[in-house]
Length: 382
Image (cartoon, rainbow, N blue to C red):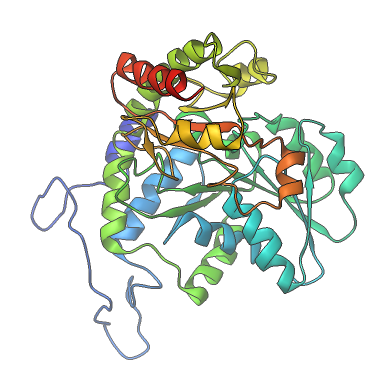
């Protein structure tokens, strides 16, 4: 079955008892067992729940993995992956990563004795210069947040595996509709399922998908022991969102292309970063690695300072000023003061996150309305 068909049918088989086309939600926290010490398929919802198991089957199919795990948030999923590491281990991460990941790595992982190095993954040899005997994992994003870099994933995976590193890819921005990192040899794929996978700003979720049964067992053990699992109701919402993922991401990518082209010619805009533009440094690579579009995230620098940029992002009418992304409504934010405020100031500067940078999440509104909204805010504030 093709991607869109699997999103609708895998893990969504009709209920065998009633014939219901939509599988029921199972809110039960515990399950009756056949006998003392004789365990059935489900025993306690932290360890396994029918609704969560169903959506995990869908996620594994869409990512092309042997299995997937659903978590209470994207950060819970990221934390689970980092718990494969031990005190004294070393993690290499790209510079263009979500602020919450930066915070977890530098404020939590370091207290557990894990060392962190951020490198510019546009220079693949940076890994070889940074790796050392205690290095165990490479963490990167398929499309970077917020500067939308598109790393050379096949090359980076091959290089990391030469050094016997686990490769974990945050695939939130690209989604499996555009990129499937496991197909390029990555070991772990992470999603903030809150974003495109659920797609409606009404569900907090995280995902890990893998292509190794042994690695799946290790991650499941951590998840079961620590307990940050996705609830049955959120599992239902995530499953519902996945059914329209391909349609939504395709349309949002087409709208984003037009918005990016508009911004590139706007007199109050200094620069635009969008992988679908020929001016993007990774445009050719994005054409090779992404299928069906270039994503629905755009970042651009306004012609103004920190305060001017704050005024712009609160002056739009259709673009809601809010963190998060990937839903049907369009969002706008200033990374320096919002999504990436957890970065140290020096780290923001090194990563190219300027005070005038604006991040857009393109929704499903009419493209002309979105362009008019941005044009009005820019002309009013700059």
